[in-house]
Image (cartoon, rainbow, N blue to C red; front, top):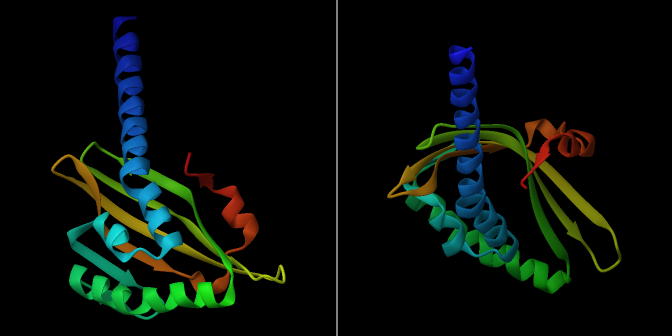
Length: 168
């Protein structure tokens, strides 16, 4: 009986630790990440990434360093933001998760993202992608170490997206 109780407490504490990691990751990574994308704020966005980040843009077959990734965004994001303002579109970005694994200092997460723009006419454009990230704690703060995504040849559907778990 003692062994069963001990095993139960060990399993419960592991589950609680994983939940704590996910809460921290949501607060330190995903909420600022989402907010920065929706505002096209490069500095806030890049701040959730490790200086050692490996950015894999699988659709374009490119691998970027921190500086390369940041510099590409510094060029493209202001144009993206200006287009949204010019066209008076409402832009939203959302994440959903398929898998979240952590051990207190490292994590691996897989999920879908959804980019949606709504024109003043009500016309919507929706783009889905799949992401895979490796995270690590640096000075007690979670950072994105590996960031990879792909549109999966545009086979991801709204049904797939909605079947995954939301951020909260």
